[in-house]
View 1 (tube, helix red, strand yellow):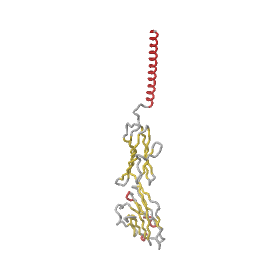
View 2: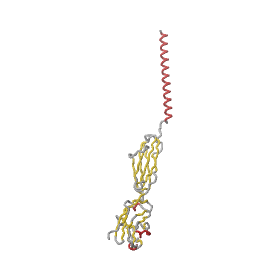
View 3: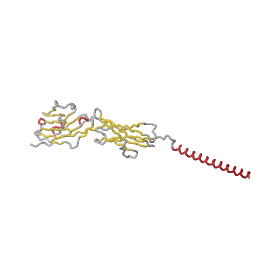
View 4: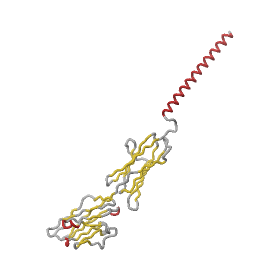
Length: 265
């Protein structure tokens, strides 16, 4: 007889970190099929490490690879209908990869299922350094921090107009002991009178996007606008008075000279 037809998903199975995942695998059993005739093996495609085994009507886990103990199960009530999917509990980052489903009944077939692990990123925190006494023209570092995501994020910065800011950005992503990433992205900007900057952290697998914004207000050391206009107005008045005084003094000096000339004549 020819090889059995096994159905597995074409696209990777996306599993959330810490949650349970189902790796789908199914076949169409013959009418007289008995579970005692079924041998099922799930193993890692590349290393051949045993993940789960079933034969003789029961689980055979003596050779199960380390790290999978008490984390795998089958859908036992659906095996007779050909559902040989694997339930993987408490998914870890290290679970990511290709799993092969081997099925033997009267003949043999196998197919691979890709598992993609993902974890959503936290809402970013934004910090300024320095964070006070900012003046227009000062250089300030805006730090965006998001944590416990997977896989690596794409980080986008936008200004007040929604335009992308790509220059002067330094981004680092470091995995913790669980394999989850912490993202640190630093934007260097020159302070303007008032500008808003937004940091967007995107998970490319989950299509999840979180963001945070900060508005930087640079305070002039010079007078505020109203006081400045008052000062300018006073200065104009003083200059006007000085000009008037000079004019009056010059006029009096001329008059005095004319009187002296008349008296001398």
